[in-house]
Length: 131
Figure (tube, rainbow, N blue to C red):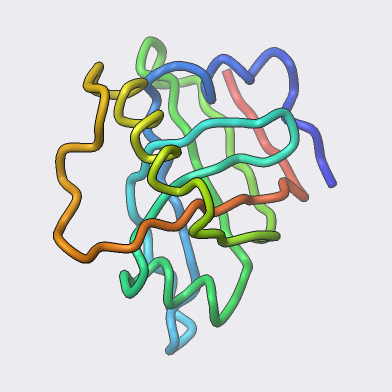
């Protein structure tokens, strides 16, 4: 386990998008921008069951996230690690909290009928930072 340096934790608290890389069924990387937060141990993001990220992470828990500072594009952190939990429990509240952080809205506005949300918890194993 690697701890996110205190000097970069602000990137996880502000409206900085993370680009999450997962491994596809054919071994090729797949990258998606996501909203993130940090619980002090895990970097967390949210997705829906059946999406490419969900399928990739169920197959392989390896993940990398790059978070660029929106106030200084030369400052960033890369976190490589593994998914230690994917849970539906509390996932609706989690996406609503992320929506509040990133959009100021109380609820996630893009929920689809029948959509099942999932909170993904990533345990950092290697961290690289710059800036």
